[in-house]
Length: 128
Image (cartoon, rainbow, N blue to C red; front, side):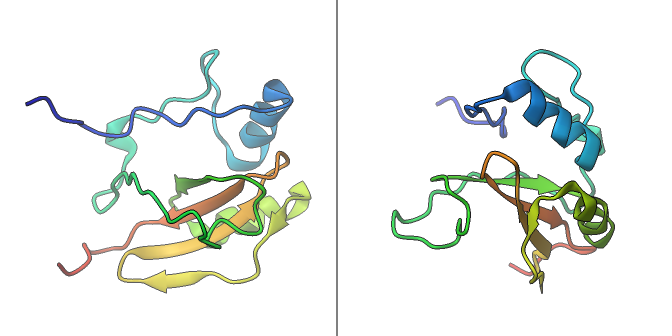
């Protein structure tokens, strides 16, 4: 039987995709290299980083205060520095961060109302 090898991409609608892409490029240092966005090379993923596909119950509040039925999760090398980098952008940054065996997490709302979770992978793999 064929199997899935990894996350192939995240695709979504935007009222102004060009300006949203420019915002991500300016504030998150994402290099938009082709018409559909940015590609992440496997060699850039840190040792304990991984990709997740997860379905949440319809009534979840985890995506709040975002206005969408989904949430992006972006892997970062330094969560604290990324949150500082975002402050002058005018986006809504969630005050709380969370550390666990799975890594270090922070959140913000982008100009389109998408909740974005920033994830700094843990230094060692989580216990199984």
